[in-house]
Image (cartoon, rainbow, N blue to C red; front, side, top):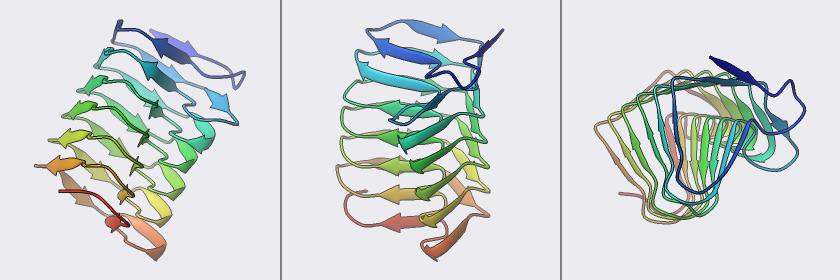
Length: 171
């Protein structure tokens, strides 16, 4: 099932704990954050989704977590764009991200993934072929992210940190 916002706004704005499974989430566009998915609060479960072709003027072209505790697993984040975190951006909260593929996203900071704060757990990911000025694959600004068993390969950074740019936190 395809859910397409047709560049008329975000695709999903989540305030709570729904389960979203088996969708293609595309065509989201916002001047703010979270073109495809914006998690405000709650603990939603997103599984087996394709989040693609979304844009955000601020953070998280594909997926943005404001202060929730979402779980994103076995999904694809591809071809999304934003100023920070083309594929995914985290402001705070404690999201769990398991076994996702993050590729061909672009941003000024963190083409694939951007962590501004919080304690995200990023495990068993394949992150490849993302582009940014800084942190082609992953940009760590602050917080206590844990990145484990994650493959980062073939990224482009125009200024620094082709695979990873660490400005602050991270384990």
